[in-house]
Length: 304
Image (tube, rainbow, N blue to C red):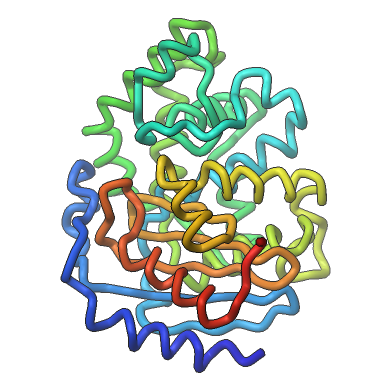
């Protein structure tokens, strides 16, 4: 299938809606300054074909989409031991909720809410130079260097009071092995990875290829079993407390971030990334979700 005309068509339908709803993530000062009237879409097929439209080459802060890649590294290092401290259930609460964490004695409900990703960062820190390993993974997946946005990382560190609370809470329950400051430094930097839709569609390619490297000819990124688990978590937990509605309306495993990006996977076929900075009330890209709904409606692609 030639996807380029389809992405151009979706871009044409989305453009008139820019600026008509949603708000950027104002609680992170560096993100509050991002112009809201942008939209990009890109995909990469299992065979390596690519298509893109709109602002697909514009880099942005990937935020919680990074949790896909740190989770992959942690599963590779720890296997099923990872789940001793992290659950696998939807939270039904905002991504930075403290209430659930207290009632469940410091064990995060899943690895895609903030507390869960902080717990993953802690486990990675115990295994070596986690920042360098993450950058090396992203560069390998994209075939080009990927870096942290220092301004965004500093902005998050200066204003991430709730994340400090989450980390200190888990530390008080004995659920973090490393110093809170070190764990959050890794977490803030992973959220500050700066990538475009094109790069993210490439990077997530192993998730539609049963864990095989998206560019081929290199070592597998993870196992087929772990890939299925990651996709399952994306479907049930990847879009915060909107996961049920996203599964209902889009029907694909998705992982979003408050930078406005959403990565979606069609197993055995393609990976897709959409980006528009204005968010809905659940912290997901308003027009990104609309674009994914259009894509599914026009192609009939779904896991259901």
